[in-house]
Length: 331
Ligand code: GLV
Ligand code: GLV
Image (cartoon, rainbow, N blue to C red; front, top):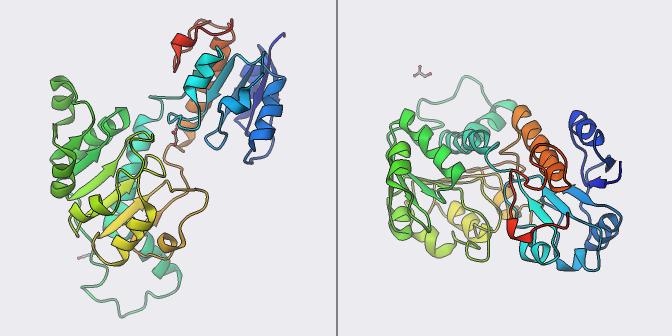
């Protein structure tokens, strides 16, 4: 085995075994955030790496590294990678698209339903021993989901998977995306394109499924929240930073937005105390893709991408989810 790879976080043993059939594997056995200095040092002695969202790979981390050929991101979103810097250095960059679309869409709906129907707060109340004989007929009134207009901001593959589920709930779907989808996809998703302001005004419930970038930073801030209906539920399964969390906490507290379901946060794993203390926010620790099958499929895809980038297997030289084919690679 001539190639060495580093795996920055604990991974399924069968995926590590698969990698080890081809390359020498050095895998972390505990979960942690790596500093730029640690990443530099870890990447200095390897040909490739599988890394997680909290590992930020930029020009500084790879400066002077003459050996590294491939970075496989264990996520579909890759705002933690400086792809132009990797491309300039001739290093392959890959992500894990598609395998998580349906699982992530399922979870977006779980958050919408939980936030609208107050699942988490009702459970907290029950577990605290509050359910005695005095629960009123008009207690725990939530918001309906079925029949309402669903808005989707960001209509990529995950947004489309969310939209297709709306049919069963009898929900018309509006979406906004920088580029309009083809008529065939719009038809398949039963979704109509509208301007962003119109989407915010008309959506009874709004789901965010757009990638994070400088352009999408605070795509939902105070001004956008002000356009939304006070009876709306906002769901973010995309990335922290797309929503201005402080503005959202204020809107939720003041009743200008009914509820929110959030899987991602600005500055996570830290969560704004103003959000944590709200009963009308359903919060989860960035786990939307975490079904047993999908996390395995993501790990396997990242491993296959890495092996292909290093010249192994049926896709040798052409990894399936290659973010920078223009890099050419150092192979
Ligand atoms: C998770 O957030 C991902 O981008 O896959
Ligand atoms: C609710 O459980 C009802 O029976 O109305």
